[in-house]
Image 1 (tube, rainbow, N blue to C red):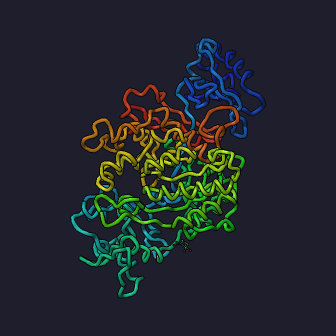
Image 2 (cartoon, protein in one colour):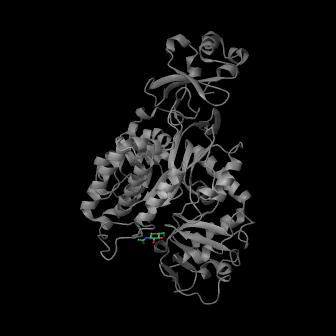
Image 3 (cartoon, rainbow, N blue to C red):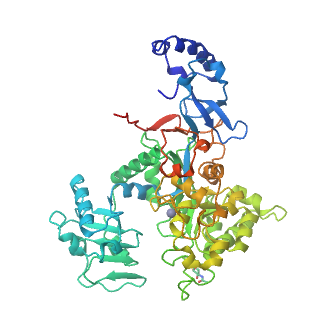
Length: 585
Ligand SMILES: *[C@@H]1O[C@H](CO)[C@@H](O)[C@H](O)[C@H]1NC(C)=O
Ligand SMILES: [Zn+2]
């Protein structure tokens, strides 16, 4: 046993370990006396506890009430515990980790789909789909398609087509839809094609691949397929959510900010949040069925006192992604001088939406990647704050502290707008692994000057309480990979940065370990109105923690973070994950 619950441990079980344990019982009972405020509390002791709490930054023990709230945190002098102290203190505790920007349902769906990442031939791709079909015999019907993600025609030497799926006896006739590695194209089977009219006209802003044969639809043309896609039932979605939460708990995650949930799915979340399977705290941002609209009448502002679910924020969308030249730039792209991307909403409308939503008590979180989208987001937020807090003698930052407007991604920001963000105190929501995934091509798109002055700031934004996250399933959900990316500005997959950056990509924007850990704990707590309750081990906080084998500060090489595994994860005082320790043969 590597952790210790004082009130639950009976004397006899310890006595059987010999007299050394007897000595410790007396000490333990004394501890229990100090620690247990009322019946039913449990005290947990460790070799050390990182609390994230300035009053007692490092402790050994904390007490948890039956309601899953921390009631006491204290340091114990080892010598007072006695010779049985080892039983108390194996393992190290840190506050439970939060992902400040992810997509819960999509992550669950991803876990239940065919994983095509890394496939290097059509044969290999077919084998993976077949394997999935074997394990999921119900999938592949018109009502439940086989879905997958991760193919890349560059690795196959040719663009795939529907016939490549029909060529397999087992797959022939099944409904299959497989997303490309960047989810900008979809490859479907003949059964899906048969649902379409005989001739399909071209789609503006999209591509229907017709050569060597039909089967692949890209960008706006994907909508043709999406319209036919059978929506998963609530039962299916509940399975997705359960799988997603189990997987996140395994990674040490106790809470997440869900960056865009439609009203129907919010209602489902509300119905599930009381259940035992709901093991991740969810701070959900409303996404209207029609993006960038005002749909406050379709959702209920809903903040549970137990912290399991909060619906008090909205997600708006300024622009698209950098990879596909979709993010809105002030000046044209360096590698595509003909375009500067496009805004998904105009400035007046964005200002109206920010104002209307915040008036209704919703925090406003705007997706902004390009420097033009970021400028418009700052403009909209500044105007909204002026309207919300018209007392001109008060600085806007005071008003912002109440409303906590956030910019999701905050990827490319003009220096003048960086200054404005600092002046108002707008919260940047940053995904360190986006920086390390994009670093291979970002400078091509942006040129050197813009990259050096504007792109993927982290340390420059540190005073703004940045919220760190991963954007799972777009990036792996593992927060230790995020910590690694933030600390090194190198890829957690390869341990490398692009040529010319031996110390990490624009290493002056790295965070140190402590700053990065705060970004995955205290940052999301503040950015989700949960300061003092989440991301911290102190009286009054939710009893959420992670047990690790070694304190993070004692890691010899930062490279270890790339494959770091947690030992246990606890949410609301209950253990939700325990790593099975393999015994060496
Ligand atoms: C901005 O968008 C709104 C909503 O789509 C539209 O009504 C308005 O005319 C647009 N304004 C301009 C200047 O295009
Ligand atoms: Zn996202």
